[in-house]
Length: 185
Image (tube, rainbow, N blue to C red; front, side, top):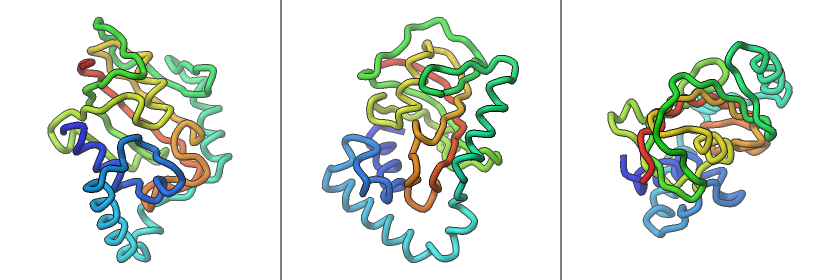
């Protein structure tokens, strides 16, 4: 997936969060605004039927409880910000800076294991500027080396906070991402 396609996907998916300020910089292009508006309109039409099933609303303590238990598990490390990660495979390449563009495969899930996004399903890795994504990704991917695969446990304050992201991600969601850093551009 090209970075513009991924950016459009994120902008459209998280249109509600964009009203609070851009989650992803570069989401203000006219075609992206139009696509976001169209997707937001489509989302509003099906909001009643989808909200209960696709946008779980987690209480802050649910995520905090998960993270408190998770940090005691073997191999899980915690950074000063509260980001938790587990090295699944350590690469041998270089590590990116926050201003680098990276190529990654990823899978995002809620705490209950429900998948909400995946580059694997599209068959192509995603390419994007690392400083244009949620804080948990920006911090976490910088810990990786090319060829690495990590699992990240991202507290809501490093993801979408108390507002969530549109209809897809509810408030206070702690998110889990499996990220494979393929290369730095």
